[in-house]
Length: 310
Image (tube, rainbow, N blue to C red):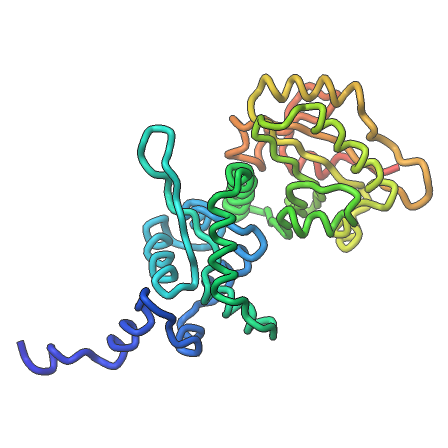
């Protein structure tokens, strides 16, 4: 082998510096290596906290899962991402769950003109997330997000907004605390919806109690995204249930306690409820949503065309 082949090129030396997992990479050099897709991933993780490699491959325009996994490995090596996994029920390990790493927090802070978080604080956040008993609930919400985003890559559909639970509470002025708020557009119609994801661990009585908050939200004019998009057809509350049996049980309770329908005071908006079960949520844009008091499941686009105003 010649001397030239033994001597790394400048680009090879740079790659080795950036790939060094044992310590921090040069932040300026690192920032120059992040693509727009990488930066979009940082914003997604800032909003939704944790994503699996499958979810990331659906949410962002990677050619395939393998390419996504290779890029995620590089971002982990650079401390842009952190990751963890858990033992699965069959004795194996789950796939990697990705969240923001120390360098990722630093890049986001720089983009926003803020001071970066201390590395020790970032590691504490990752540990809290990895041990959070609601992690399965959060990943379930993000499964629906990813599947809906994947659907919009083809055809006349657009996921214009999906806010995670922290931002969704602000969207609703604290009157309701949905797991997510979405604005979905297809074939010229726009749907504004609050999404509630059920994992079967919460008593259904507590689920039904959430209707009071949504009634207050309707009296206040609906979620903020509904006002920003000039949505005059009110909004929907979508419940994704753990099983068909639990969906049927909840529907009976919701029908008995329903607060929806025409609003009464000036400035109010109408709102309606639809449900689906986990068996169908892999295709959330499809005909899986059953409005309360209806007998036929509908697409999200069908719900958007249903008027729920005064």
